[in-house]
Image 1 (cartoon, helix red, strand yellow):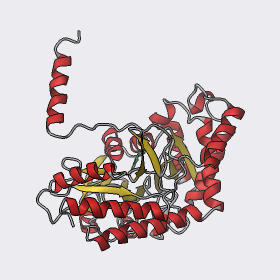
Image 2 (image 1 turned 90 degrees about the vertical axis):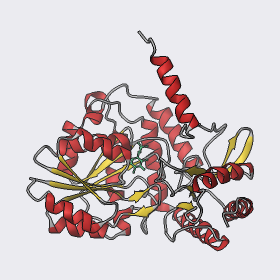
Image 3 (image 1 turned 30 degrees about the vertical axis):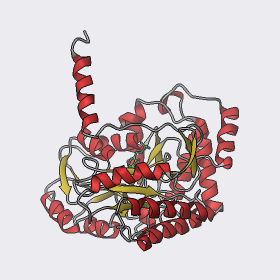
Image 4 (image 1 turned 45 degrees about the vertical axis):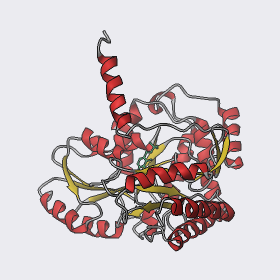
Length: 398
Ligand SMILES: *Cc1c(COP(=O)(O)O)cnc(C)c1O
């Protein structure tokens, strides 16, 4: 009996639309890339997680096709019944080698990896100490666990230390952080976190979804960048961003932890195996990362060009090193209107980017979040800067 529920939802939907909180989806009419087709127009894309430009890379597409021909489309099984192929084992082995860990367990998504990591590992006698700004999937995963929860102020080592002291009576302690926080592109202080973890006898887990493949000298992620590979006990990450962008995730780390997850982790036990074509394409991505330093180098150069260019134009852009580049409007009272209005006009200028305002970010912190990719050419980055100059002046933002 659907009854009045439809009317109730319709009025709720109207209400979020009025508040400007309704998320409308733009429809791409072709493949993901530096340039995409939206509404019949070619525009430059500055809002994808396609950091290494591999989402439509011909080598990756060819590997997916080859695997499809050799292995078929799907497995119709979870891993422990008849859903484990030699490709899954190979990808788990190569992910471990890439991340510098002992073992890896694949999931359908990093959301599932985070959803299935806490509940089997930490019970009511143990503590999870989690950064206030961690990703939604960590928050949900933590909710599913019976462990005691301790939340520390974002990136604040004093606050973390205080929470570790409060958790001292617990049997085991697990500190959890994003490696890179997606709204600002800021990196976790993993050295500080690992030092405190040692001092207070805690384990460390890092969700490196916005880092695996391109942060660190060889793209191994934030533990490599911070010099703490081997001191992080658990890494979760996604295949759905830099590593080809299709879907898939994993938990990687100490071998006993991974073996335990294979026995107990519910999204692994009760959800289908990753499609073989994703495994085959991901193996090709890892091969490219081993043998071809160009995407990493181009991404770094593009990041510097865009960030420095925006700062030179007079935009409110923080220093940083990550390809997430937020353009703030902190000097303006009408920050939300600027973020929305400018992103609309930028699209008209052929630049696709997204404005974020309250409640996605705190009030007064509206921004346009740019994400640059190795797929962009220097000329395309310059076109983005030119459009920002024109639109920024029109709106009085610079
Ligand atoms: C994107 C993201 C996820 C989700 O990854 P999926 O594989 O798309 O489910 C999890 N954690 C963080 C930090 C992310 O940025």
